[in-house]
Length: 328
Image 1 (cartoon, rainbow, N blue to C red):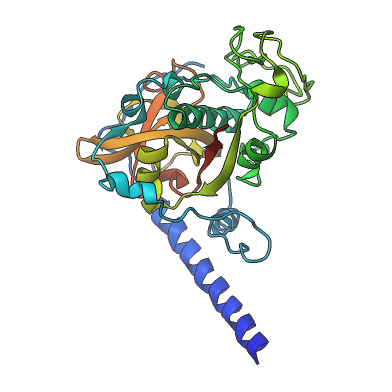
Image 2: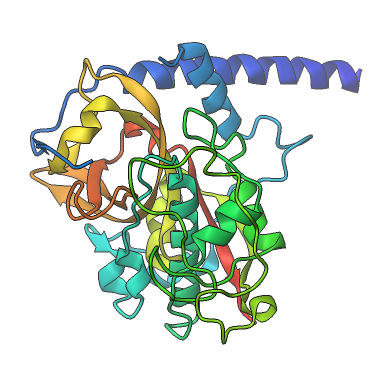
């Protein structure tokens, strides 16, 4: 009898989640551009069924049987500063952590997943150590050694695999392209004419940037990682630091220069993009999230952009992840 009740409950849950997913898709479609948005020239179809499946996956439908990923519960540290600030910028909150404002340029290599995750991890290392660890982490090692790649539409099939790599393997330090900063600085030029098979790279296990650094001892890790619900995003960021997000990229986003972005009605869906969320605010009455993109300083507002907050614009509030650094 108990088994029958269990299976009936599962069927009802699936039905409920499916309807909620349909409602979600209805609510985010056809959103008009915000009054604050200004377009300009920058350098340099997905089915509803696919969107619904992706949405249901973030609801942890399989959490009881397959997924080890958990939503973060309320942290006791949230109570220290329980107020959600009207405006917040992690660069101002932790000015000693220069990595927070660093902007990568992925060219056309679909590497936003690597730059956004390594960037947020570096920021959190700096914050957790009160600035004693204050350097970029190696996107080169992440791209060349993890075996992770983005699909043709730009997203990782499992959003937790990068943070799991940070937990099991860790990352060495490493600056941007054409520098000797850290153990393994980037070897990928930020250009649009990228070589083919960019992910078929050699995994080097030594420091070629600053060769005085010990490769084996330079790795830093996270102790655990988690998904963050919408209501906890602000508390999480203002307490622990930037988080990684994924959002749907539409063609009108390439015209964004400043103001608050919202998808225009006739814009075309292109792929998914990862970014680092560092704050929020209000502009001309419109609530927004503040994010660091991976298209270089020429795009948007010196490499940053604002997107409408509170409406799950382009699914920006649906795929939010972070981890807690493991301090030695």
